[in-house]
Amino acid sequence: MLPLLFAATLLGSGPASAAPEARSSLVIRGDGFIRSPVNAIQAPAPKLRVRQSEVKIENQRTGTRYAVDIEVGTPPQPLTLILDTGSPDTWINPTCSFANVPEDCETFPRYDYTKSRSINATRAVNTLVYGIGNSTIQYVFETVKIGSATINNQIIGIGIETHNIPLGILGLSPPVGGENEYPYVLDTMKSQGLIKSRAFSLDLRTVDSPDGALIFGGIDTGKYIGALQKLPMLPIEQTPRGADRYYVNMTGVGLTYPDGSVTRSQQISVPVFLDSGGTLSRLPTPIFQAFAASFEGAEFDSRSGFYFLPCDVADLEGSVDFYFGGKVIRVPFNDFIWHVQGYCVLGVLPDDEEPVLGDTFLRAAYVVFDQDNRNLHIAQAANCGTNLVAIGSGRDAVPSQTGACTATAGRPVATAQGGLDVTATRSSPTALFTGEGPTGIGVGPGPVATRVSGSGSLSEPTGTGSADNGAGKGAGIGFGVVAAVVAANVLGWII
Image (cartoon, rainbow, N blue to C red; front, side, top):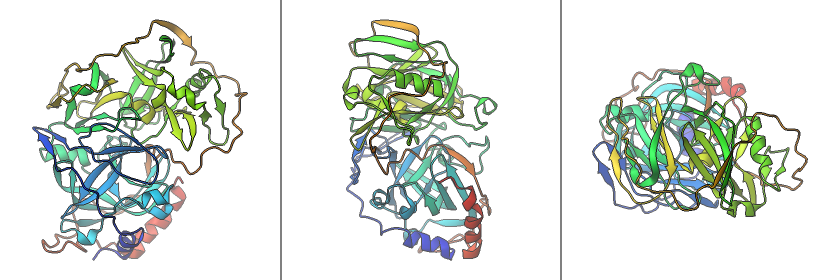
């Protein structure tokens, strides 16, 4: 029988699962890649939506998160998870009463293990600490369906107690410590022949687009401009905090103004990692200050660390620009400026320890994440149709096909090299925000930071279960053991 705490958490930590909304029956599966249609999710908070999706993706304005629809168990139970390229673990069933927006959390369906014939629990528990919030989970073997792909015996976590996280997480990063503790979702998809490489493409599109795309094992040449630029992932020993993430080297930043003129920084070398789980980007303080100083009317809020901007700035025809060698990704102001509760926030915060390009960057980029070859491939995102191409295997697995889209009119007319100084630390801002500001917003979860615990074994399930009734299969760590693990780790949580 499942341990008492585990059972009580699954059955009592939130309302009963809501009836799933009608989903499109059109499912397309190619040779070596997975695609399913977008299905819009209705939720109480205002939504930003993202583009054509191989699995459903959606972006919430209040606590912006990109989420994917999956199904877990036998028969399948629909769930919604945060899409996170900053952590490797996949887990479900957050504790809604401890979420940053409880009423939002409670609108999403939950997994009920008593209704699954395919669950096998393990004795392993863990506490995952993210940039914002944490999750204590118990690992189980379960059937997971993403799009039209069924993954058998995938190890996932089921939340025992979570804080400040309103949805479970689909983790797609490399193992942060450099070595897998168990087969993650990408590993299992490859080993079971669903994809040929541990690679996927991600296209979040603009804030106003109704479609988003996550393609496991494939790319869509109708969703970017020009050639994909290959960027090697930094070795773990060269990353700022010794964590193995999707780190690449950023060589410059700049701005394109409404008249088409461009100013850019001097040549720089800043390691940044691409994190779909981060609402905002986080960059070294001089870059943060340089961006803020470039917008007239920017006011600094010392309580939140945000810069607030006049909202009409977001409607101007300009962009915040990011350089990677010979490739530049231009993020329109409307995508980089975060609209929340009637306020407009510059989509970057200062971080001198672990710079991140989050959703405010990824909305303008088409990115292929290739774990097998430790490369990222990037291009300017666009939309000129659909042309799906499988990612193969081996050294040149990612197709080198040029995007079918072309740049729009109004290209930059002049560039001021070095006009944006991102090396000097500026004095304290004189324009201060004195209003109340937005409340109850979340900007996470951000990258996973540490694993506080690691009790029990993941080597095999504790029981084989029954084909007729999966409820209560395996496990046996008991209430006392789980409670002790939770209590021992409370001090380690970041809340």
